[in-house]
Length: 226
Image 1 (cartoon, rainbow, N blue to C red):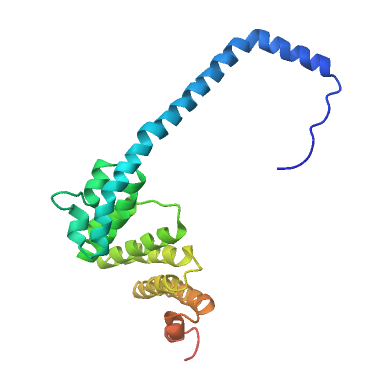
Image 2 (image 1 turned 180 degrees about the horizontal axis):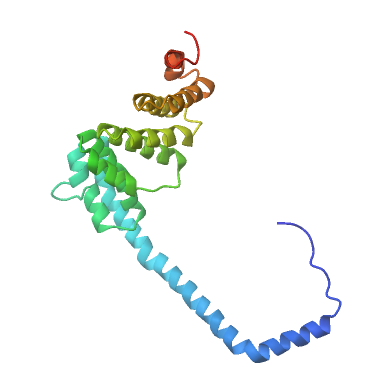
């Protein structure tokens, strides 16, 4: 925003005349359009206040018990619920479109990954979305794990690469994801891509656990001598 003041109109009267002519010809249409905007805005407010907000609250309440099971490592109960409380899958199906249902996908993907159901882990994690870079990087990393377990090395390496380069401040997970990407690229015979991943670790995360040993992996690809 600037502090520049609008220029003064030299011919103010002709401008006023033109505006008067506009309102004579179009005033009714403009008022109808403005009224429509007010009605639409009111409808949005009413939807957010009386429909969306209660739906979000109900979904969040349903998610609470499933999260509790997840923290206790009771993964099947977290996914499927108990006789009283719904699990993540029920939250997803019953409260679709809510933030809680979206978060339930992240949790469900993690549960499936730990239970060894990698196809369902991929399904849930691919449908998950977030504006948080840290959480998105974690989801990408878990997708990489799932694809890797399914033997889909190309897909896994791509996910690990995204996860490792998405949030550079994370000096614990980022070098780990970059290493996994590099290791898979090596297995795929894509040594150039592997070297790129290893070099990022060396340059940005030299003091991480992976950083302390990364010279060995670069050396075997002919980049540096041990």
